[in-house]
Length: 172
Ligand SMILES: [Fe+2]
Ligand SMILES: [Fe+2]
Image 1 (cartoon, rainbow, N blue to C red):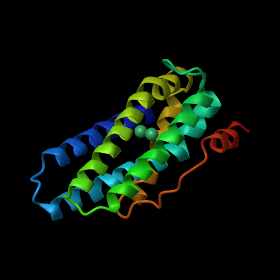
Image 2: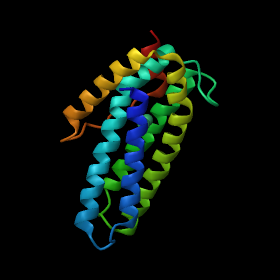
Image 3: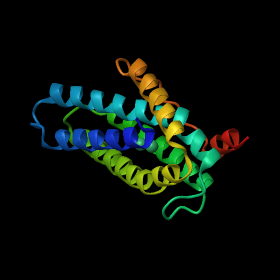
Image 4: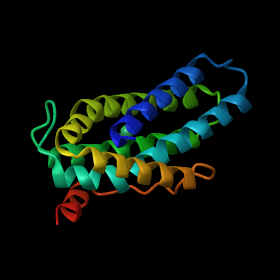
């Protein structure tokens, strides 16, 4: 197992679920609501697991992957993005499933999440593959999946974080 593979694989699942919602019958409000609840848990548990297991190690080991100048910048960016995705999820929750406002909020969350995943894959995962040992990548995958499995059924409480404080806390 490899935590970078686990993250990449879950991104594909997130893209698949957004696509599913886009082509779902628009008059099936209950179905749309249920699909969204599933995706919401997927997004929140994934971001939470990344913040617990992946990003602290990237702060420690990374030097800046792809077009990122440093690991600090990568991680601050990622936490900022996660906060934005959590905002998007809150906005969807305030709308009635299947309404125009609901679709607009889902689209906004999709844009925020797509931009974030692209950057995370291009910079953060690359950086980690260059600097983390295979043993660490395996061990983190186990912790990541273990935590997600424990929280899959009910989801997690979404908690926004201060990007700079997050980096400082894990630099020590
Ligand atoms: Fe991710
Ligand atoms: Fe992320």
